[in-house]
Length: 136
Image (cartoon, rainbow, N blue to C red; front, side, top):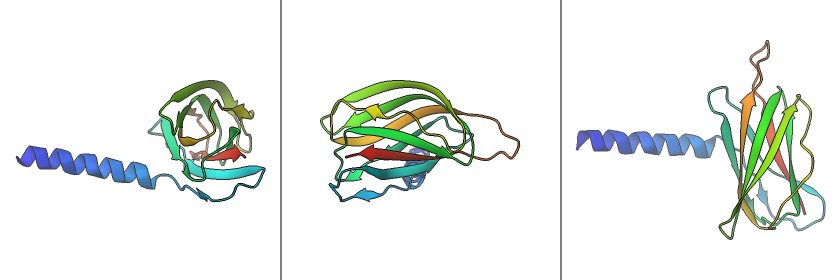
């Protein structure tokens, strides 16, 4: 019984950490143009991050912006409200201040975007700050 409680506590701790890692913005506007959906700081330990889409989640296309440190972006996974998942190979080395190409998505309503990356070494051990943007 004690082991079960320890395992449950560990699982809860991991879930809380993954939820607090991102800083989502609630999208309430239908205005045309780019809207910042959320942001994360890429870790040297993990190579996969997710940004949850909150509020008005309908977009035509998305892009990622990288600041503070370089990042080698491998693949994006877009999770749709309808249950589908779209894998989009990116394979792009982004320097600090760069962004991905504009990526058209299949469905408009998205609930989460995950991305797999490799943190590129840098002399200051800076971590890349990644923002997800959506076009209405």
